[in-house]
Length: 237
Image (cartoon, rainbow, N blue to C red; front, side):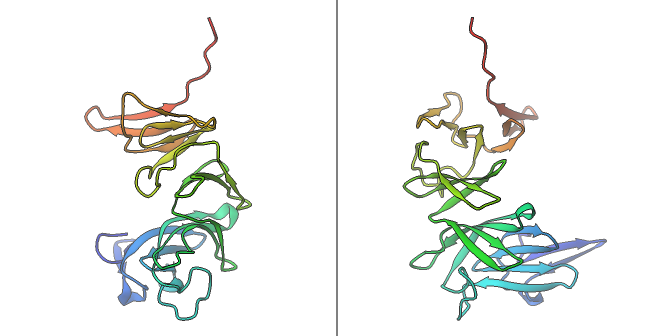
């Protein structure tokens, strides 16, 4: 996606930008994800797919539809804040912000392109984080944490973890390390309901799980990439 309207495709020595003039439903690109053989684009108030071979757009959902064709189509303004491809399970995962009352589309969804089926997994405002077998969700709900199995779509409430912080403001990044949740505010949550605040740092600019730990930041002054992982149990002495 580009700063200019639309998105651009680089092919050989040519660059072509696709906007409303080329058949796109909007110029305001929010998210893009490659799935199987085409590009899926979340626009402001629309979801579309793009075939790079034919340069054709297919409109999948729009806030402007008069007669809704699926569960997110029509019904007023909406934004897709998260668009995650999952070819292993033949679906894309959507995090939707519903801007129209009664806001029933708010939440985390599973979309199966082959059958055009949309399944709502969880309501409320949601921030997802990829885990080994699914997604960890932080939600503006009574039980803020939940886990989604990517294969089955089953949601499990994680009611042993504390904090009711609004995910839309404070914790936009977090990772799950074993059974511990680590947030970008340098808070460690454990399944016994406790939280532990770092005494040395107040914020990590990056949280990307890799291996048994996560990347937390890149220090431009020292040219160092910082990696954090859990301590191994030390033998008692």
